[in-house]
Image (cartoon, rainbow, N blue to C red; front, side, top):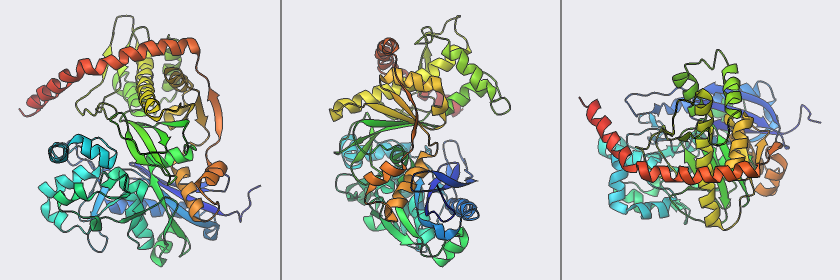
Length: 513
């Protein structure tokens, strides 16, 4: 049984809208949690920024909430999972020169085109593991060079959120491979900064923090950081990972066979690969285990779309009436596979994997007078599940080994119906993890390895990764129906591609009047 002296580690999850700090024990049980909101600015359409000082204030506050409940000497290490691709530019003292630019910022579209002209899509993908799109920091740095050249010239370091927090905690200028690589400035095969892409921007590897393997001790807490967090000075700070990879680690995805699907605000799924492989069908990231890679599917909508349907389309207030979600789910569950001939593409915020088309948008095909809100709600779940099934199929074919099970995490995984649809669309059992906070747990696993609790990541995951609370098997007959539906779903994008581009141009013309 746990005691008041049981050693703990802290996993900080510094995500886009909130920061969480959770103290974990050796068996992966959450003992105490702190939470703080993160403000976000939207200074112009498509621009999203945060003050890096808010990252630090929120992180310190959440850890203080933990140390208010457990004695600081019980905390043997901490590690961070962070919102990926978001970056800050710092002066020599480590102070931000301007607001941080977020992963969902869209200002660097022209820079994507410029870098593609300079290097080619294939070359950028081969070096970074990622098809060019405005999400990685590489393109934001190009934008700064063209629009705020004096800021870029004064930049001592461009840094991810994890590196920024490590610097505040320890004074060290260090980060993790698994946090540097989502920035799009990292040579994945050679595990170093990508000079070929950075040199034309006037940047060298010295303008980034040194990147180390996840699970490595990067530094120790300074007196000043100890005072701000309530932790002991000298507490080890360990290299963590981007929140997506950390979530995979928290689900125990460290070998071929198991995939994870995070049905959060966005939908992020991943499969571990022992060798480096690139393809437009996925993004390649370093694994939070420090060994191998994660082939990752990214869709910008998930529960975002659930909430959009509930409030914008159905005019319901899900906050005042949480039962609205249960009623809608019951209506959707009563319908057959394919929602009586209604098919939905979930690209309300553009398509990342596999089409990489920012102009792509949501479409509902097959609308008729027989369709009501239950049909829309089911088609939304099916559209997101079909896109995951499509991506898993591409990864499986490239790996040459089967995906045998999918671990579902995130808010959407609480829906029995959605998990059932995902299982049947993918034709694989879906396992629901007991751990909602998989990213913080992944950071906790890194911290535990750094603290010396375990001999390696494999042993740490075996002891700490989230327990499976439910296994949902696919129905063979319904899976066969979903295979038919997937063939139709796959035909939609090629038919719509040129319309999307023309519609975006038409909209642009109207907004400039």
